[in-house]
Image (cartoon, rainbow, N blue to C red; front, side, top):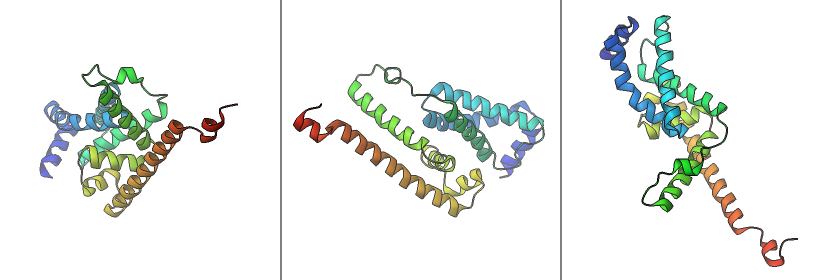
Length: 194
């Protein structure tokens, strides 16, 4: 990509116009990526800001990327998201997440599904999380993902397949768990609790 090479060369000289172009081009997608994984717009903003701060730091130290800029930036963002998962304790309260919409039941059901999916995604390996997010949230193809992860395309396909199988298993376990909680212990229903 000659355009990207030129942009990276200008950015390595810390040209404001090039840095602005990079930010304007990549920050919206990085924000969506982080917001979907984190479920928090403020953390997503922090992620994007930190990713670009690290990018600038790398440029100043002459260690920035020579190609595949998008993959480089998303890798920084992904590492920040993984670190955030490790630090994050508990989930945001349901009341805070639900807007005072016209359909509170639908909003609540949607929030529950999103929360369950986010929890299931957090159980995946970091590579699986990144493949799922880039493929489904950003619409990247396997070749683009392979560049971002520094892996062969076959490995990306395998990671994707294992991630989908794991998500299916995690979500089925969750449904089974919720169903058993809702139904309760049949013996308790028949004979009463002690």
